[in-house]
Amino acid sequence: MSQTFIDIKNVSFQYEYTQVLKNISLKVEEGDFLAILGPNGSGKSTLLKLLLGLLKPMSGEVQLFGQSNETFRNREWIGYVSQKSNAFNSGFPATVEEVVKSGLTKKVGLFKKMPKDANVKVEEALTSVGMEHFRSRNIGQLSGGQQQRVFIARALISDPKILILDEPTVGIDHENVQSFYDMLAKLNEEQNKTIILVTHDVDTVSNRISHVACLNQTIHFHGFKKEFDTISQTQLDNWYGHSVRKIH
Ligand SMILES: Nc1ncnc2c1ncn2[C@@H]1O[C@H](COP(=O)(O)OP(=O)(O)OP(=O)(O)O)[C@@H](O)[C@H]1O
Image (cartoon, rainbow, N blue to C red; front, side, top):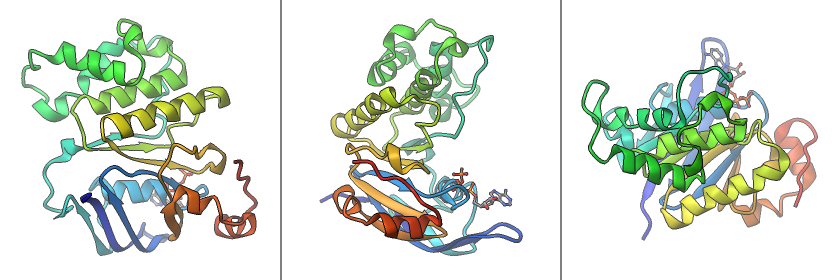
């Protein structure tokens, strides 16, 4: 039986004056490949920050691997790639290898020595995202989509159980979005990574995803991708507050 990795129980959150999330309940099981969809400002990044323990709910509780987020210590089990991580200018002085290796500091600590097999781990992580031939390249000389893959490799190097990606397809052109999802699906299927990705773009939700959650202050829908496909355009427009395109 699969294990519940994330259990969000009736969580509400507000910044000083703005109520952002109301009574959110959501479970993520081991092996899920979940897309969280919602318009700009619907609370997606805030929800991720609550999951990562960067914010605390006003009410309700977030449990990670059966433990309260407050006391959860195995942070290396969760790999996170933030929004706009792929925004280096061409002169940025770091190679792909250096960027990926820096992901190990989460596991070994900032001032500890790198493990002997660090180079092998870099190779494995880069191969997982199809970037093994770019190891010596300067990070700033890669395209947005290639940089995004490198940051996923950086998150993968500490062998997380969950990979959380905030709007990873922003800046990737349409032809490459599908191969990007294929790469994520491979991580999900072959390496059993549970994946949560956030996007405000209904268009980019690929069939490779197993589950979809629609968020706009509350969770309007959470279920299998094939159930999501049966939701009417009008219903989606209502949740979004404006017209959205759903492309099959
Ligand atoms: N630090 C903050 N202080 C006050 N309000 C904030 C803060 N961060 C976000 N907000 C507000 O909370 C709401 C939700 O923001 P959030 O970034 O979670 O939305 P989002 O769904 O990720 O949006 P986007 O798709 O544009 O990235 C917005 O109205 C935003 O202006």
